[in-house]
Length: 69
Image (cartoon, rainbow, N blue to C red):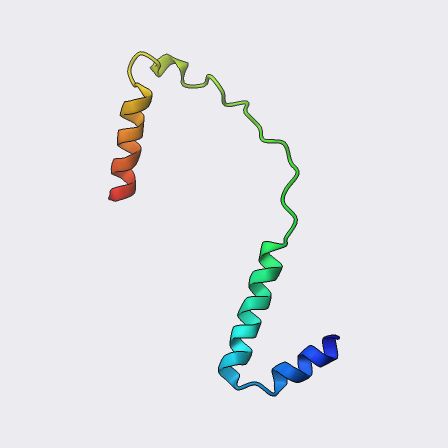
């Protein structure tokens, strides 16, 4: 089947060949195995000293400001 695909693609105009290449690379990237590493959460509680200074809402607002800059 691979030779049939290669033959068909070789008969296409260069622009379509580029589209086929892009699509194949997209599929290969999409099907890449996901990492099975466990998410580390050893940072949890590291900012507890700031608990009284900042609320989750104030941090969300600040994050939104940073995204809009």
